[in-house]
Image (tube, rainbow, N blue to C red):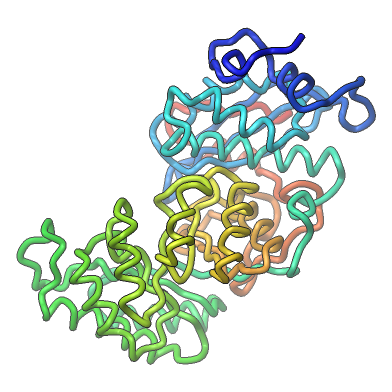
Length: 412
């Protein structure tokens, strides 16, 4: 049976994803061998970390279970539950097809951005874990192989007095010397005590000097022992962002992140092209389409997608490929558990233009306890050779750390 265009693009049409695969993509014959696998269920459990991490598990009739993670956000577990009937009975190896079909089926829920893309990201990442286990290959192999055996991690640092330049410098030295990181990030949207009206996004001269002092003291303290980036969290006006970027040009700044709000690409481009201070952005746009203008218009020096938010592993790889055509490096934003952090490491290993993956939980003493394997050693992640993502949930820790009211998902 041949279906017309309207039927294929109607989210309420009576057809299955197997119809879509066989009839529109030319797949014929019986499935066999390692491909004779079907998805039986998708479940979520939310962990109470320094952010509420949504873990996603995909179950199959072969007994193979894959684990992924979606960026935290209200409604993500409900969206995953809403999508589950669209993948049950389907082949988990068809990652691209299933992901694109979820985007199509969830168009009414806003699947070009926001929490719907985030929920799809969790399923997509879990599919990579399943597929790697079925095919007996590490996840990076599903992305085309690897450029490197280990991926650099940058540590997002904080102090009890984040506005104190000396305290920031002390913490930078501690993280480099005691924890072994050679890549750091500090916040610059911290109060200086000179603010009059934060809502207008304007930085007064004294505020500029205060932020420049943080940059100067941190970079001078670590010197060549570490690269240091600074995050503004979309806080400043275009003029203030330009003055801030100009004031720190003399220092060894790895990048200045999100100095202006993310909605207006024209302003983003203007700020980036105004200064020699490298500018990074990207965590607040979705899928490759959201990153296209940032790259095409050279509105960033460094692109910073967030894997469990942006669409998943292959979507991040697609963004990196697009960035590579503009010779733009990738520094993945990441506030995730060890699950999505390891997924980001697999992507980072598979692309040529990877700078580093963020680590946002160094103050959370049990972060790595969530999985059985070691993840970060001396500021780097050794990319696992085990099938799939290469991490195994410690179910006792998962149960202990669940958000109140959550239910533990099935082990198998």
